[in-house]
Amino acid sequence: MMKIVNKIRDSYLIFCIYALIGWLYEVLWMRFVVPPFKWINRGVLIGPFLPIYGFGMLILWILLKKIKIKKHTTNNYLYLIISTIVITTFIFITIIEYTTPKIYHVDIFFKKYGIILIICNIIFIGLSYLIVKINKKLRRVDITWILIFLLIWIITTLIEYVSHYMIETYSNKLLWDYTKDFLNINRRVNWDASRNFAIGGTFLLYFIQPKIDKYIIQNKNVIKNIITIVIGIPMLLDLIFHVILKIV
Image (cartoon, rainbow, N blue to C red; front, side):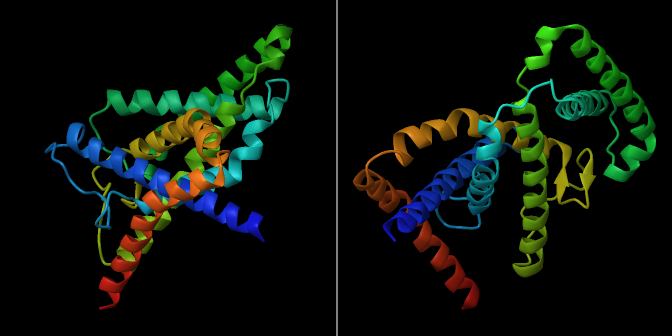
């Protein structure tokens, strides 16, 4: 029974930590990157928490930790093809984004550039296959991080899309609107946000989560309980207070 309780506590602690990190990221992004460069509380709560980031990273941690541990190499041609498509598509779309002043909805973008993108992918898949086939040393290159990057991209984009829909539908708020942004889908998600989430999520899973596991999750229960009380209880009370205000 205690093992289950401890797992729930650890999961909630991870949720709280990333909800706090997400809030810091959003606030700093609005202050230093997005005009009019102001300090804005990007959350729906009173405190410095953004639950969507907590849920997002908790989901990524649960779904991807086993995939991350296993080594996936270029020796598997399916992984090689997927990795080549990810890299080629990423570079291609980035070039288009910074060489055209026009703003495209995702379907307009693929109508205009879809065929070129497919041709580029076919060419680079062929080149990657030939290079790996000729050079035996390249057959054991670990490309797990590229697969993780792709999965994070897909998962976080879905989370953002669903979250936008739920928030707009049930709270009648529009926390973000990508209508005028490059490669957007129904104003709910766009290229820049999804790319940043994929890069950030990969960084967090590979560099931050191991430190959380080492210094927090694997620590003594007393220390974890203290951290959970300091971070988790204020956030829980904030969530409860927010729900009560909505009901009232």
